[in-house]
Amino acid sequence: MDTVQKVPEELCISCGMCQGVCPLSCIDMIRNKQGQYIPQINRDICVNCGKCFSICPGKGINLQEIYKTIYEKEMVDVFHGNYHAVINCAAKDKEVLKKATSGGVVTTLVEKLLQDEKYQIAFLVDTYNYEQQISVKAYQKGDVFTNTFKSRYIPVSQAAMVRFCIENPNEKVIIVGTGCIVESFCKLVIENKLNRKNYFIIGLFCNSVLNYNSWEYFARMLKEPLKELRYREKSDSRHYFYGTICLEGNKGRRKVINPGKKMLVKPYLTMEKCIYCFDRLNVLADISVGDNNTKSGDGSSCSVIIRTEIGRQIMKHYEALFDCLDTVLERVSKSQQIKLVKQQYRFAKVYSLNKKMDILCGMNDCGNEKVSTSDLNELDKRLRRHKFGSDIKNLTKLFYWMQIKWILVEVINYRRKLTKWFKNKIR
Image (cartoon, rainbow, N blue to C red; front, side):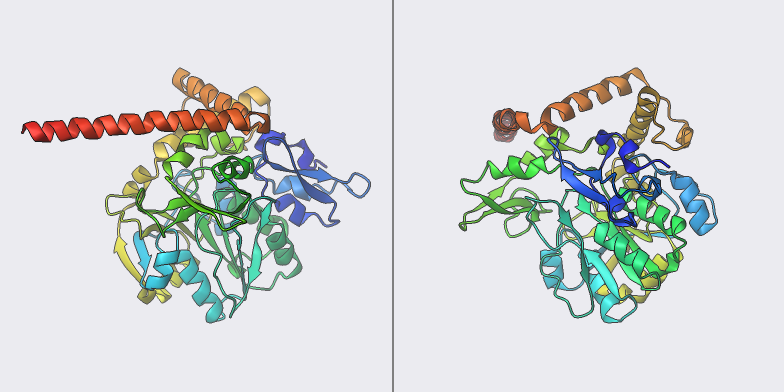
């Protein structure tokens, strides 16, 4: 049978799902020049069981088939998914709200579900150091959640979570992950005949993640070895109400950076598979959570799409812990730019045709999306940026080019402010 090495490297998202599912532990994750951790198989041990290939999200997973198999109903819209309700939500606990990225919903739910023993274990990330590949860590009742706050924007190995779920099929587990992780895990549930009701899946909205070369890129902004990189630090939010980028060095030096600098370099350091991803709203999760970018967005709340009966019951049970406001899916869809997500679906169509690997897995007629000339031009532009930025040999050039671009951005913004000042003065 096929193994995960059949999947082209550019489609790998360094999730470690293949490493976790391997029954003989013969897969290691090795970093390449593009900042990815790629699976390397020990051929002396491998028996070609095909389990790694089966659940690989890089090669594509049919969301509609997975949904129908697990929930025994049709998925009406692959870009938005099925749902019970949509709310904007924030934790009432001010300390959690202060530390969390936006809303504190994930931290509050995980902590309470473990405390009330409704679930035995949760898998979360507990570090801000990305010098090596980061992995999820098991958390139980009574554990301290100090370093689990905030978004990482980098691929996280889920190998430990996968192994635990396979070896402990009766344990009740909380899983937090982006769309690709959730898709792969749902495939794992089917392949290994696990009980889906044992898992509470909190899906994160995801635009894209950066490769591990981003660590070296931001390290250049600090004049000492980098110890921690926090993308959503709220201790100094002068530039952006969702938080700034904070760099902390080994010798104690600390530097706060405008998050616009991350947005500027993002097209160059994004994983290529993210260019073809169209599951921004995490349609297979029990609840999907992300920044509240609707008109009511305030930097301290998030949008929550309640998708399953498990999700509905849990949110109902713990509603007293949150300040919630009903909203509609259309507002979340607009704020999360689902129009661009549909374009990425068309990019996936192009890849499937050109590379002769169907990463859509048969989902070729979603929303009657037709590939246009502008799509091809945009895809070409994104791939050229990605190819240049992802090669570690170009990191120095990229860094100085971005510094120049940022100066130009600031000049343009200053001119706009000056023009606005003069207009007001004339009035």
